[in-house]
Amino acid sequence: MRLPPETEVIAPVTDTDIDRAAALVGGARRLVVLTGAGISTESGIPDFRSPGGLWTRYDPRKLTFDRFCASAETRRLYWEMGNDLFPALRDAHPNTAHRVLAALERRGGLLRIITQNVDGLHQKAGSSPEAMIEIHGTALEVGCLTCGARQDRGPVQARFAAGEHDLRCDCGGLLKPATISFGQAMPERETVQAFADAAAADVFLVVGSSLEVYPAAGLPRAAVESGAALVIVNREPTPYDDDAEAALHGSSGETLGAIAARLGLAITDA
Ligand code: APR
Image (tube, rainbow, N blue to C red; front, side):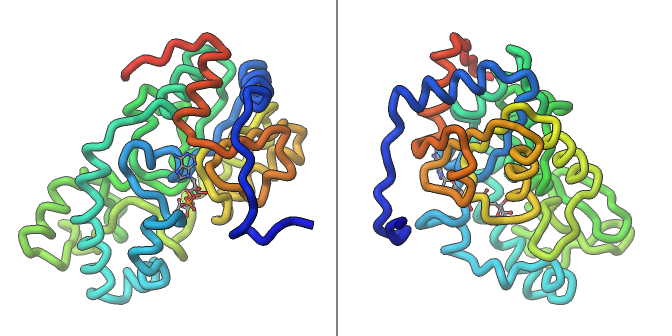
């Protein structure tokens, strides 16, 4: 019988756990990694569902795509949230965990990093664009909901801060940060590719995700059903821990740093 989550004692990460995870990750020929907001908290970016996370400060039900399109007030709230968060995202630096994943790509054997994050920190750490899928888009750009034109977010966020609250494209369409909101269609090409990569993986590594939001949270199952070994590094238990060969409940930076040390990986500042 499992204890209720609030009283579940989380076992610390042991050397044996690190050995097991390092053997799987280091021996992978087609390693696919799914990252979530938990990999970026050590870079100063809050996650969503931890105490103090974004969804404890903002109500996601008020920030759905339909409400963004229908309500000027929702759009104002969205951009105001950006005033608060965009500078932290823009100026954040990758941490050890991002750099270990970039080093695993250089070492060979990494097929893809599928990130739910919108902060661009994997790319800042040196992960190559072709190794990346940003399945929830990016907060560093803005897109037009009519013509699809993309632009850097900085100047548009500055227009909002200067008092322009009805932010429109030259074509007249609504401008929105290029992230995928609740109720918004997932990017089709990226999502199809992500599930194809998961099915091709021999090892599937999850780092810093509660694995609560689909379709991304369905990727570990797709990998396991295709025969991959699942490794999870997450501070708290996830719904997929029982399917994992190794579930390590520790900090992503410290844990991936220990795995990198076992593999003799040189972690460079990108
Ligand atoms: N090291 C390891 N794990 C961490 C750390 C850390 N330093 N910091 C936080 N975590 C863990 C938390 O315990 C939590 O289980 O990371 C997980 C983050 O979970 P969420 O906040 O739910 O973030 P994520 O899984 O990325 O959310 C998925 O939900 O709201 C949507 O679009 C949003 O992409 C996001 C999606």
